[in-house]
Length: 102
Image (cartoon, rainbow, N blue to C red):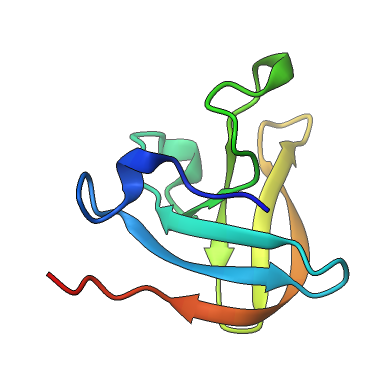
């Protein structure tokens, strides 16, 4: 299970969008708006939260940039020798769009 950081929830930044389960291993993930100012990842509208730790080991971010659709998610998992994103495609289930009920 990987939950988005607390600051993404509705009582703070309100960038949280929803959740899903990765189909093969049934792991749970949340995703939020990509609100970073990083032009290299402008084509990826979401942050897919893959770690509950604020600062995971190895200097990695707790999220991956990507695109989440209703039955598939595309995650940027690395970059190639030209600095372009390397994508991984996940089949997903249980897509759940969160609603802000304020």
